[in-house]
Image (cartoon, rainbow, N blue to C red; front, top):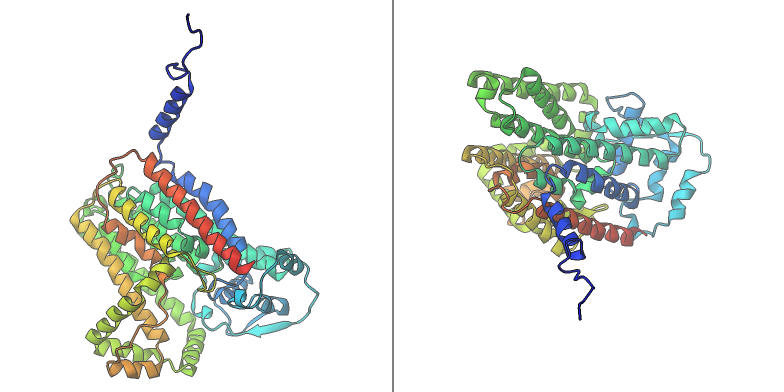
Length: 484
């Protein structure tokens, strides 16, 4: 008896054929080229969740950054020694003190109440000593957000979220451009830019948000000038653009060592070795001149900062002198600090959220380091020479050491310095946090980069995107449980 029912397993139009066609389309997907759009697809909603779920003022020193943005919103690039703000703005910290999760739970109705605060007249003066030593560059976007909210006479809570959202928008835009132009390490940068700690800072009023964005874009643009095979020569305009990006990144967070990355650009693309070295020297000179000018113009705030340090028994000149006169002793202290605190730095690098109070699980920290290493080793897109790797590693290591030098200089108390000079085994560099190394990760990971992927790019891209979603869900769940 003849079977009139066709076998779906052998039919070209059956479910099996459909699955094979879908798999073929997935494997043929230009996943690497789609990473910029995928970044926005993931970064926009995740960034908004971080911006609104992390309780107000719970990113470290966020109130100080908000005051700095408020000063800029009034048109003042140089911060006044004493900032005059509405009393309602200064009282915002009463509602959300540092580590608010240890004080009370937050309810969404609290935000609604803050949208209609009781009318309170009067103004208060704020001495914003620590944030006032920054120039205005990292507050241009958050200051614009505050200015827009002030234009419409919005309450302080709206000013705050406007500052967060403008910082987030700036971050997303710059990283999107970076992912479009970077010729090597695109998947690594994609993952790093969507790491929980990175998004946590990007969606805040902190100066770290524009600092991350500009550092990522500068790194991507230098690699474009140095490695993109479609570019045979680097024009003066393109090199000037790289210099301007580095200048802005340095104004957000000073790091002269990133000038070394300009050496990646082949001399042949700049005309000659002499022209290359002259151009790099001009960029470095411009950065040093800008930094010196900012310090000169900001002398009153720097003096106030030094006075505040002295009241805390911190004397930067003496701390710096210890490094100069006893470099080997300081090197030993740096190594001991790394040995003692490396696990803490690793957790803070991936995700110590809120006011350094909400850690992501250990397995997630380990997984992130494994993922970043894997994308660097197996998804570099092109091979680098040994000299290029060494230059990237040197840049990252030099910048890494400078973080410890800076924090030792401006944070070490005199009584601790005396103990350190006597060789105390407990001597450690204070106040270093893991997130400070996020901008150093791209050159370091590029130094580790290996061969091109031997699998279809769609597979690792899909794995990375899925892991980003999982880690963000874990981090945001912890945030929600801590605050709400």
